[in-house]
Image (cartoon, rainbow, N blue to C red; front, side, top):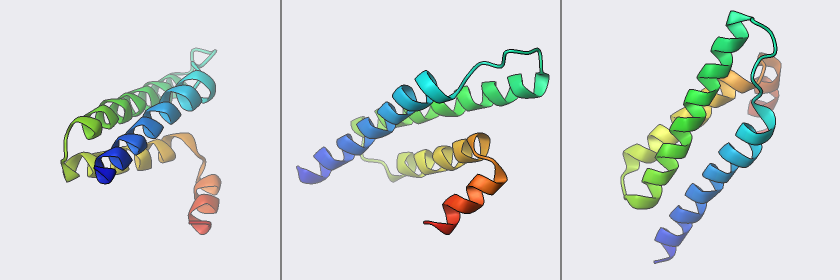
Length: 94
């Protein structure tokens, strides 16, 4: 029972971070017609959508592959969101 509650709490936290922090505050539609910025924005949205979908799946199922997918998506979002210098800083502190 505790494991299931913990799993659901973590899935809810991922969903909340994806929506409340990234989609509502941090990820902004490019203001210019810059194709590169538009592609980055589209990729960020796609990855965040994947995080939301897989967080929901993690609440519904007990499948380690979903956790692996979530980890990969979070790593992918890190690469799309943070600069190389910021990523080095993050990795140095983890």
